[in-house]
Length: 153
Length: 314
Ligand SMILES: [Zn+2]
Ligand SMILES: [Zn+2]
Image 1 (cartoon, each protein chain N blue to C red):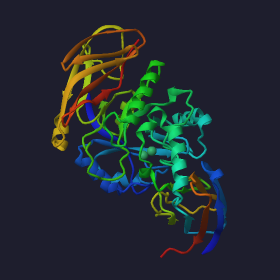
Image 2 (image 1 turned 45 degrees about the horizontal axis):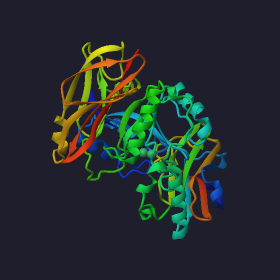
Image 3 (image 1 turned 120 degrees about the vertical axis):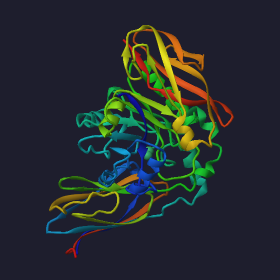
Image 4 (image 1 turned 180 degrees about the vertical axis):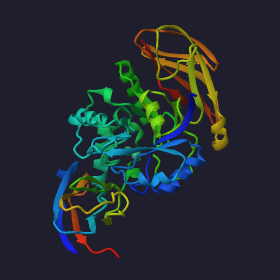
């Protein structure tokens, strides 16, 4: 196992709707990439802030039918959503677009965790991309580890 | 031979945030007598290969660009185009790139609420070149009736048609899991005149041969056999209508659909007709004519049951 990324950082609301790129280089022969990723918190506990964000959302998107959305409770709790996508030297290798805030993925020549594309662990420049869809809390702590590994049995 | 095929054009699996395995999705589609589906997982194509082991339904390979500013469906593109740098002001360049690779482009649920309620779900792209957009979801998220969002989508679609754009209407169930919803037979019907396949599905959408439906198959032909998606001479025409409830009754018999009237919608307004097999229509130049079937569902009156893509006039 060789560690390619091992980092923790904080994402703020100003990064909403942007991509955070974590480049890494695969320089040796590898049979698999292992990605461990988590972020926290997942949900917004502050109900007052949630009401405000929902109100802003409705004012922006509901138009003349805003009066129909009387129950903001059905949109709660609001969630942070930061998904992963992956690029190898030869191109896009898929994404894990789902709500889970703790994820474990493996990519090999003939296998990949759901959402990702199996294939060679090519030597060269890769990137793991955090797709920041929504940041509803004041900050989100992210942890990312990427390993290149091992001989397949 | 020309034939209408029930299809579901918007599906998710475990490869993104769906509850279905690919196999479960294929089975569910078969149960609903769907001849074709589009696998459109969020931002990934990783489910495509798994569909190959099934001979039916046919699968048109797609992806739902789940961007920060709108959800855009891309079908049958020969190359991957990156969704991550799509922003409101560059969308025409992004759609042009997809078109270059032969992909079809559809607007998904344009009036869904956006971030943070449904991230990126509201269509905020500043499209200037609607030529690149092939279709738009008029019924979405399994709501096969004119709820608020669908009503707005229908209105937007009509105004785009009146500006001279040719956009096919579709139903997108945004199918994530099997659940006992009340719109089992709702689908998009596609008209194909070749052997049914993913390519035939793609051609039908590209040529505007679509019918959005809460269940019934509903379409019309002119006296010369021209139909939805076609371009005809302006002037007097007789439209011959077909309403077919067989598939609906077979798989969704518990829901009572009663067609009651036909509405012809065009650039110059709406005209209502009693349910009949033939309608004489005086058409104008450079216009569009979409037919709608209205009726009752389980006793609830005034429901839109189906709408056709337009027939266009020269
Ligand atoms: Zn969507
Ligand atoms: Zn979707």
